[in-house]
Length: 255
Length: 364
Ligand SMILES: Nc1ncnc2c1ncn2[C@@H]1O[C@H](COP(=O)(O)OP(=O)(O)OP(=O)(O)O)[C@@H](O)[C@H]1O
Ligand SMILES: [Mg+2]
Image (cartoon, rainbow over all chains, first blue to last red; front, top):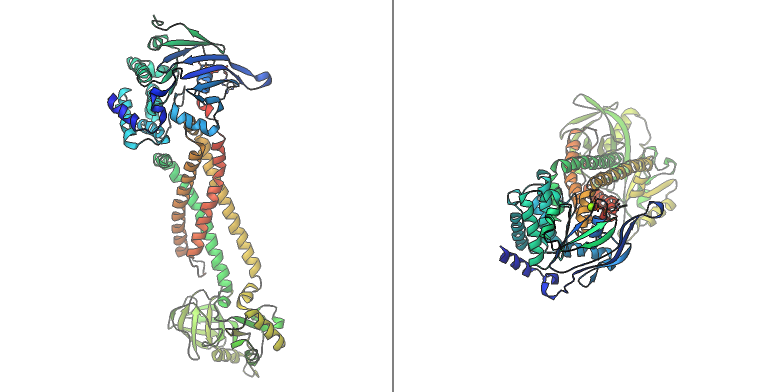
């Protein structure tokens, strides 16, 4: 299966698939502050957050509700502009990209699993995956093979032709994970996939995420409340009230 | 563009209803355009269809052929003007008539059937060649005999015309001799029967405006017009055309605005999906194209239905008018609806371009 996968990747014209030539600290977040609103209603969601994640690293981001987790990964994924500070992916300064460049950046380099409303409602599970491949002009046959393989690995082979409304919440999140991996992005950002992971299959899905990140030299960040999942990640970052801190090695953290 | 088509396939009911609603709007515009064209045509058709370059009336007629009275020798005076290649008299009156026991009103035209002023629009049969024959635009058949009332003169229908009505009543084109007979049947000791107008054609090397001016200079008491001017100056025709223009125009504008709103509602309903599509890297241009494609498909499908409805309506509505489906008018109308619908689709496009993809994240 993974040979076929690699063939698909080789066919892509995109230089970012060429993993060997990247600098190792793929993601660098420097002094990022995010303030929502102005004046009396201003909310500081992130306070001078700094982190760096290596290529091939899969890290967890934990913290209570409202602490700024979604805000941080949205800024990293080029969806939200920080108030101050910078984000670099490889040698790209994400905070300096234009609106148009950001759209391309998201399509080519970021795989995002959102906290909710993840799938295009009028496309089937398989079509949701194929759609993002179409955005970067991947070959049709290669995209089909990769979509089928991902759906298979995510335990969704028999749900491929179902519309999102015909899927359970967990299945929907797994489809979204498949879509996030579809374009072989540099960055995989997963926001609270609790429902998807809430089963034995869930552990396999996290393992799949971890493996994709390692084997293909991506950078993965997973927001989670579920400390059992932390054991599949390399490191843990914690946010408390907008302050980001690095927690020591996560190995065995769940026990 | 696959996205737009897949969505339409998955939401057949929604897009079906939308297409139905749009087709009714286009139908309304097409039907109004067709009917108003038919009505104006029925008012002007008789004059418009005359085979002539220009017409001369008496000055006192104030642009109205029915009010014009000229002595028959005016024809020779007009023919003598330089630049005029041929001239012939036209005489007309409205009279009662009966065909196969049915009574009706007829506008009788006495014309020179082989000279300027002969009618056009022959659908069937031939133009009259001798007295007592007529070519008719009305609900009669070849061979019918029309008995005029009160003159008692009988006209045999030898030709059927289309688009040659006058003031929205049927017309019968006959010889000037027959016309004389009709008038003399009621007024038997007239010294001469006046004509209403002189039709004239212009020599190849002369211009119609020069000839019109020359006739007015040379023949006293006469006003001359090019055929187009004579038609445009038919009393009341301008305000009637304008009123219909406003009616059709307003219907068109309302239709376009409603179509624009329909798609805006669809867009607003789908904002969540659009936001997600933006967040995963779809450009707003691509989404705008996708919406425009859907508008184009809906409007074109709706237009096909609307043309069919118009066709059925024209067949089954009996307005007493000779209604013609004009292909050029239909194509122009459909294209205009398409172009303006796409413009009104900019309302939706603007909404899409303004979307903030960041709102796709989080639990909100
Ligand atoms: N668009 C916004 N406008 C104003 N305030 C916002 C906005 N988005 C988030 N916030 C605020 O910023 C803070 C951080 O929000 P964020 O969504 O990043 O939290 P989170 O850690 O993802 O929480 P959860 O675990 O509940 O998803 C919260 O106080 C939230 O109310
Ligand atoms: Mg969140």
